Image 1 (cartoon, one colour):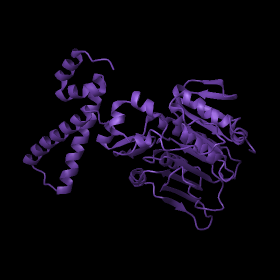
Image 2 (tube, helix red, strand yellow):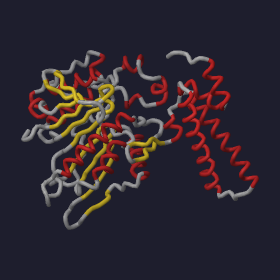
Image 3 (cartoon, helix red, strand yellow):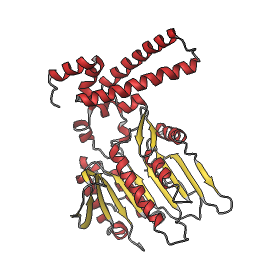
Image 4 (cartoon, helix red, strand yellow):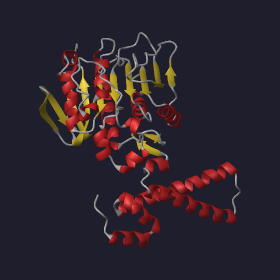
Length: 381
């Protein structure tokens, strides 16, 4: 990373010594000033919250004390940020779609690129609901979000699809108890009750739940709340997908120091989930694909076979490897081979390019780096 010129620090120090302390982390003055403003607002809110807890009376001396305490809080927050701690952990939240997602140490912070493909996917599903024949309600919608983390994907899809799908079942699963606890916190924080509506006459329900589970265990998917409901409509996952080598060499230091490796790097103990899927786990860069192999193995099972699948990936190279897993398995190729897309960071921008990947014609959509592989099951498949 190139060194910043001293003039940048002098300019920042003229505005605020705290802005100068943030400059090394933020890398430019406008970003440092923006973050300083957010941290100052957070410090003010922290002081008010503490006073409300103590039920402190309002007075001139109290106002002076509040200003002092606010500055103390701000200095502490700036010191944490200057050491590289992610802003979202300090502020405690991150916007995601229409929601405010609480962030805590030990659980991966939601990224804007994840938000972008989640919003596009919600738009596709809403359009499908609107295109139902007149007087015919949309069919039930069942979604499973694997490696749910904060619950951001599951919660945003649930929130977005509620107006369109009278029967909506969303399940988020994660191996981490910290993640499941935080997902429940975000459920409450965003006023999305676990069972938001249930009609005793029509048995139409809108339910979102979170479960702790190991995706490599037998039968990891939660059963549907309604045994008579439709099969799985969407399997979505932002799994660990970074190789150990890339994690050590390419991942930002702040990510390595503060975010959980469990959510980023597949453990070396994970073995081949299904030998019919052609994945060489002895090759370091391909071990990063082990979650995709496992999830595709589950998707190929006759009891699952989701209508749609979306996986977040690191880049176009990994996207092509995931497409290769689909093309290399006869069941998956039959189910999804005609409906493969790769979405870039911003899938609603730019155009659509058609390319060949692993013998399949693939639509590459949007702008930026490769970010997601989207599979849509063929009609009648």
